[in-house]
Image (cartoon, rainbow, N blue to C red; front, side):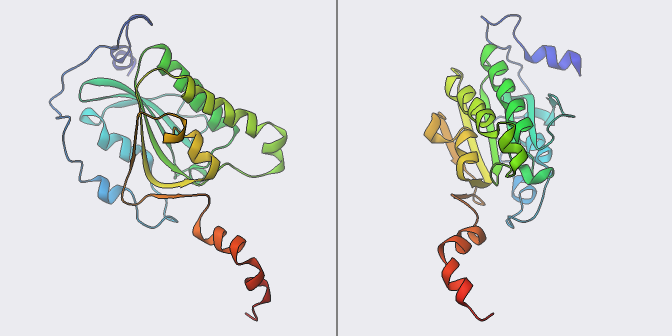
Length: 213
């Protein structure tokens, strides 16, 4: 794994990452993705399966896998080119962004930018983790750190909304509004301020409160 990791990186920050020609064609269809991402927004799935399907030969190395498991940061190749992948992990805390996940992703984005590694962001985020503890420990500041890391990056940036993309958390996950070079959406995408149930409770709160049942 260490040898594979080193093969992905340039020898210094002034060089481009080496390209490795793979037998896995870059224009493969990836039909398995249709089954990997559930249409039901309440169903969980392992984002690692999506990453494995996207990258060449299914090979990738995850960075800090044991810390902030609700976000996946990995290095791999797509069409022979080294890429850095940042992806929400629905299998852990529903993929929500908290302080640790924001810090982890921000550091990884800065690392990739330092070594000229393009970024691919896979979005399935229901929002920031709410709570007094998160607020007191600086969730806004940490979220802004991830936002700044993306905005400051000079490498090519591609984002793909796989399913949920709610509120401010979607914005910091390399949305088009902060400068993603290419922004794509999977057919199962849900781009909104919040989920449908939460929005209904806000918009129709008086009617709901006045209802008999």
